[in-house]
Each structure stands twice: as C-alpha cells, then as structure tokens.
Amino acid sequence: MNDSALFEPFPHYVDARKVFSQKGKFAGELSNEKFNRLQALLVEGYFSVSAELTFSIGDRGRKMIEGAVEAQVSVACQRCLKPLELTLADDIRLALVQDEEAAAKLDGEIEPWIEAEYRLDPANIVEEQLLLAMPLAAYHDQNECQIELPSSNADEAVSAERDQNPFAILKELKK
Image 1 (tube, helix red, strand yellow):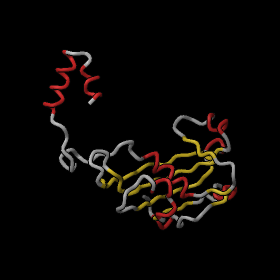
Image 2 (cartoon, one colour):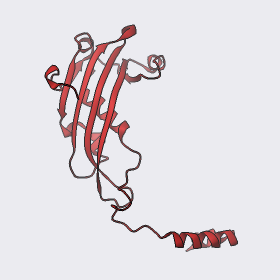
Image 3 (spheres, helix red, strand yellow):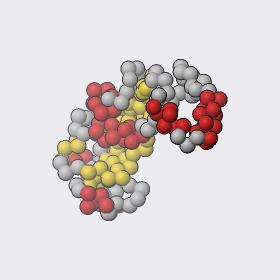
Image 4 (cartoon, one colour):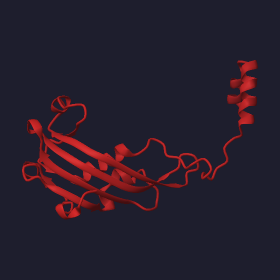
C-alpha cells in the first residue's frame, strides 16, 4: 500500500458525480461488518481488510477506480474442515459504467464496475474484489491436515477389481 498521508479514511459512500473529478483517494482498514457476503464464506478467526482506492478520470474520459486490497481471513479447509488462514490480495483496475452495453466496450485489461446510481459504496468495491480473489477450494498442506487420507493400496485394489469386472462399480454403489 502507498503512503497513507496522501489518502483519506474510507467514507460510507461517495458521490460518483464528484469523486472522480476531485481525484478522491481513500485508504485504511475497513470494518468487518461491511462485508456480509465475504463473512458468509469465513469461519471464526482473525479477519482484517486494508485497502486503497483512487478515483480519477482516465483516457477517453473513463471514470477509473484503481488501487489494491489485502485481507487476512480464516476459511474452512476443504479436506479437514479446520480453520485455514489465508492472505487475499488483489490489484484493482475498474471503469465505472452505467450498463452492460458500456461494459462490453471496455478494453480487455479493464474490468467494469456497473453502477447506475450516483452513490457508490467503496466497501462494496473492496468486498467484490476480495470475493474474486478467494480460491475456489482452500486446503492445508497435506502434512498439516488433521485427517487421514485413504491409502493408495485400497484404491489400487478397487481399480484392479473394476478392470476385471465392469459391473464392480455397481456392486460398490449397492453397498
């Protein structure tokens, strides 16, 4: 993150008609209660979010939202279901557009932020970027997981039986 002296604390909302022309810059820690969708994916544990956002008018008169986000979260390991600490980080490069048609006209390296209202909530932008940075499935390292994985010998025996008898899989399902 950049030098925080140049940035203001995050507001509850910004007026899209003003913040871009005034080149608004916001940075700091965001309150956990602002992230309802993200919290639904987390388990109890440490949760902190820091971000910085810069609003400006870029080339071609585009309203640009740029910055970075970083969070420390605790999710459930998909193998043992115990808490797993993750660091989520993402760079933000968005263009404010009013509809899907305008979004389709953007360059490939710029993502759209579709908002028809004048009132923008910076925490929503940060939360969306964190959700996109979240891995589909998170696991501890295999030696850190607190669950015993089936041995490969049992898998080989089932595979050998399946190769000999094509109906062996039905026999397994019947059990």
